Length: 170
Image (cartoon, rainbow, N blue to C red; front, side, top):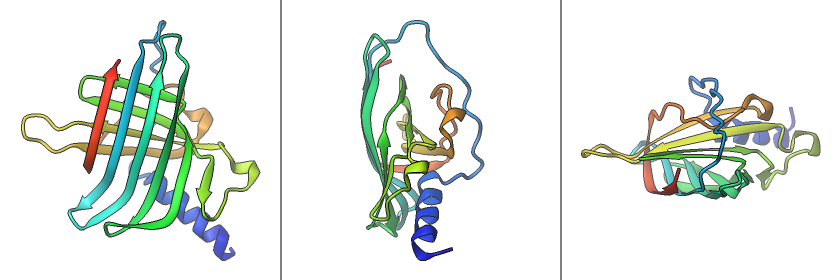
């Protein structure tokens, strides 16, 4: 495997952190409620060991149209590397202190993603705002085939999240 292919595979795996990934249950509503989310921060294993910097902005209209952008920057400790995984947000879930999104992987920068792999795999990110003195948490599901996602109901959030979570609607 050449260096570029190894880097692409590493970035794809890092973006997904498929640690005990679970299958996403379908959660489609008959009528969509407008919703929006903004997530900026790091998936942190320890205070000094962060794996991903998450930057997501997305919204869903009352008609169910969803849009937005997602970028995951691979980190070394707490420092960003040049490796970024990007894609459009295609599904949003917001309820109370929990938000979830799905994004197909459209590019891996600076390596690039071969055309046949663009949007073939997707990742789900779930965040929960800490309440009652608890920390914010994040979970990553995938990468898996994009067709595996039939909704974006929240999944487990086993990792600490160091950042900001803003949601509205539901």
